[in-house]
Image (cartoon, rainbow, N blue to C red; front, top):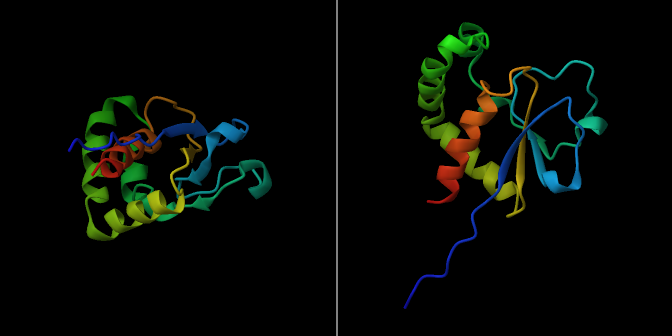
Length: 128
């Protein structure tokens, strides 16, 4: 008997300074620090997952320096491999209840930020 094809979960990334839209689904802030000048109402979050953000030491080391991007990704993935982080990610996926997830971040750099790494890790986890 063939397996039913699983519908893949949609996970988006969006800057905190972009307006929320209904298509965003379940919005999750994935920064340790609250984005400047943004209110709870404007961000329209389902949750603030600050513990899933990179450690303070890793965030400071990276400093959004593109030449450190590859090393940052490796180090952040190692942090996300920890048992408690795996549980937090599973909880986040469950909290979204199958709706699209938008990972909200405050960084100016749209190509080198933790939300991109976390999206990839969550996508893989949701397929397990």
